[in-house]
Amino acid sequence: MDLGEAMIVAGIGCRKGAPQQDILAAIAQALQAAMLSPDRLDLIATAAEKGGEEGIAAAAAAFGCPLVLVPPGELKIAGEKAVTRSERVVALFAVPSVAEAAALAAAGDGAQLVAPRRVAGMATCAIAVSGDEPGENP
Image: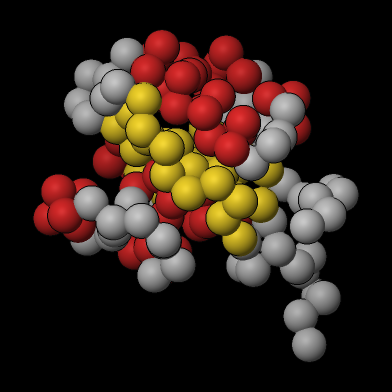
């Protein structure tokens, strides 16, 4: 897959109070799995309910990336394309993977996962890339 000008999004899931180092480690693992350099990362996304997590905000700041908070409805729609599943996450958020759903939702229509959910300590990360540009769909 030629990523060219594609937007690269790291979706984050975590347990309450997850430390920044776990989030950074999960992002590093997911970027490595996708064979992407950290400087290619454009956005970090998570569920709106995770907006108060200091570790996620600190990780976004460390990467110099905007943090996108995905509303529950968008998370649920994007979650239909998730490839991994956590029953705990389904019970709490009604999606199979917060990391995958957040990455896909923030990357927009036509987004694809290039690295499914990776786990590091109390955090998970998945990488999605943007799909078709607006107006390119048939």
